[in-house]
Image (cartoon, rainbow, N blue to C red; front, side, top):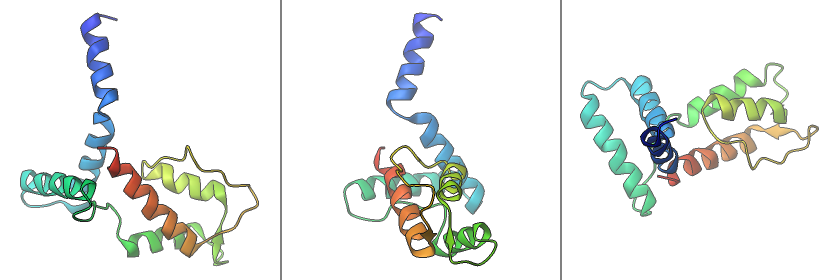
Length: 128
């Protein structure tokens, strides 16, 4: 691999640009704004404000979406899901599962799921 290419890859990795671009693309596709450039500027301004604790980070999914996702995973209506389902939900949204330490027999309730998803979504933006 050429030195320039390696430096470029390191730059992208260090600044987490592929992840940022993926999140921005996902927000664009979810919201489909009439003015995508203005929308992206607003999202990046919200990220900046969130980092300074002056506002909320942008979320791909609102509370109703997270509720719906839990309902889809809890097909039997038991009021809980398993850790493997929780991990897959996080991965599907491009969120980290690295620090999850859940035993396989843990039951994850809707409240725990929603709280965990919100935390992971916040963490995903806080690195930029």
